[in-house]
Image (tube, rainbow, N blue to C red):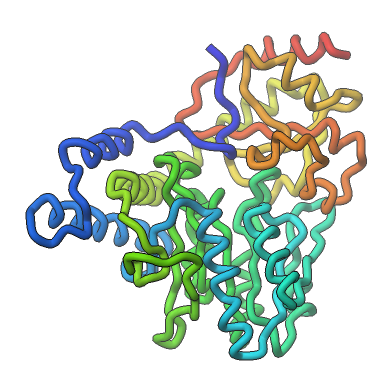
Length: 376
């Protein structure tokens, strides 16, 4: 069976989470908005419990958690939802990085078209943005700073806690797209200076189609978000629509398990990394991004003289890997992340992303290496 090594695209669902999702599909199929019977009461209780579970991972309050369809929606709700506040306050300056996910970069392009100024900071070969660059870019009229937690292509962890320190005395909102790091890299996201955190269920061994936006109060005030669509009033009117209780319950449990088992999971992922690099060593891979700041479950690399697509095709019956973000994999355009890092065209064409989890089984790296060697 082909070994699945594309966990940054989506993770397998944790079996305990799967069982809970099924439970809230049937028999516990009630609507959390139904007040007149026990089906609705139990559904509402499940949602409230999940809210507390998600909040607990980042040491937020349960009522600071809004459920969404995923991190993409959470990113859009943050960025476009702050437009009104920016216009009211006269703050129309935004800082982000060149290596953000398209779910951040594209909404920011919309703001730009509407008259906002967006500064995109570079990162260089290390793959991470220096907090000093954020400090230099800050202005009195900066409305928002958006820096991702863990890069989805390279696995490089961004210094969000140091960016939070830079913003300690500044009124700008600080948003972190934590799709790849939530429930895995715990400490940084617990910094209370991070106002808004985007979460994705299917990146933390939960179900697809659900996520969250953690919107922390600062000095007792919630972030001044406006809804993107309307009708029903759910989630404080910021995300109307019937709550998918089964997905929310699954996300809640996935979040709680991620926090409780983070140490054990990370140890397994680090052991797998060692096996991977040892197995691929004869091919002399070139690692992209700072290895000292890379998450335990990701490596981005290239093999000198080899095209990434050719490698993917050659090994597809042995391992399932990718050459970048699943959201843009159909376009076959060069990775904007690797371009921002200043990699050569040859390295970008050859780039491969290998990502795994604590649930990943053994891989026959000798067979993989032999298959790749046959391309040389």
